[in-house]
Length: 199
Image 1 (cartoon, rainbow, N blue to C red):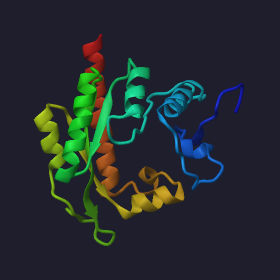
Image 2 (tube, one colour):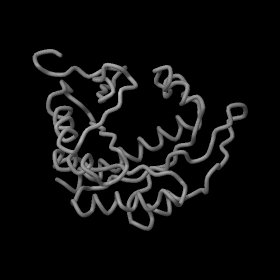
Image 3 (cartoon, rainbow, N blue to C red):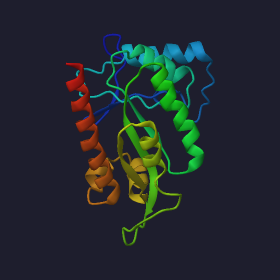
C-alpha cells in the first residue's frame, strides 16, 4: 500500500494484480458470493495504483456470470473484449455464449484467439495438432468477428511461466513467440480501426 492505494506487482513493463496476491497462503480457497466478487473487482479497478497504462487487460473466468457482467459495466468505454477459445468443438458453445453476452451488452469484440492450437515439439520445433484444428477460425467467421491468430502449446512457455521469466524475451525464436507477436500486430490493427470509427 502507498497513499491508500494498492501497489501492483511489476514485472518488466507489466503491472499485475491478482486475488492470489492478497491471500495469506497461496493454496487458500476463495469462497465468495456475488457482492463480494463485485466489491473486489471495483477495488482492483479503482484502488490499485495503475498509473499511466497503454492497455489494461482483465482476465475473466469463462462464462457470463457476475464477474464479466460487472467488468463490462464498470469499463463502459473500454475498447472491447478479446475472446479466447480452444480448437475443440466442445469449447464453441461456451464461447458462443460469451460472444452473444458481449453483443447483448453492446460491448465491442476486438477479435478471437485460438489457444492450445497444436503442440510444439521440444526437440524439432514442429507444431502438431493434438485437438481438431480450425475451430477458432470457424467460430470467428460464423459470428463475423476478426480472427486474431492461434497460439500453440509450447513447453518453454510453461517453463518460463513457472520461473516467472517473460518467455517472449527468453524464448523469442519459437513458434509460440511468433504467434504472440502476430496476434499483437493484429490487435494493434483492430484497435487502430476501432479508434478510427470512434472519431
